[in-house]
Length: 134
Image (cartoon, rainbow, N blue to C red; front, side):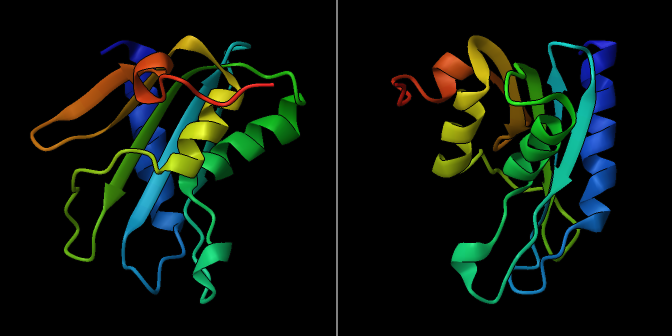
């Protein structure tokens, strides 16, 4: 792992403590690195009306857009999680997050998340091969 990736992991892990997850007891943290070299973080924020829940990945990307504007480009994103037992479980970004990540990425943007045995690291092109574009 690069020093930047290590920092992203640390920041994503740290922000998990801020997650609001009273319904699932599943906390998620995300950290994104933009092409300008800035890091933004987000955590999941649940709602009793589940459709209104905000995923950590989209929360972090929204922070980046709010800070840098709509022309941001993501270079790397790291997603971490823990369940009610405090353990990390396999969990890739959901479909909605994949599409939002794709909106602000290039084909080689790196995405890292927890797999069955270890962290998985893929490119945006591998994560969502035919993403929707106008």
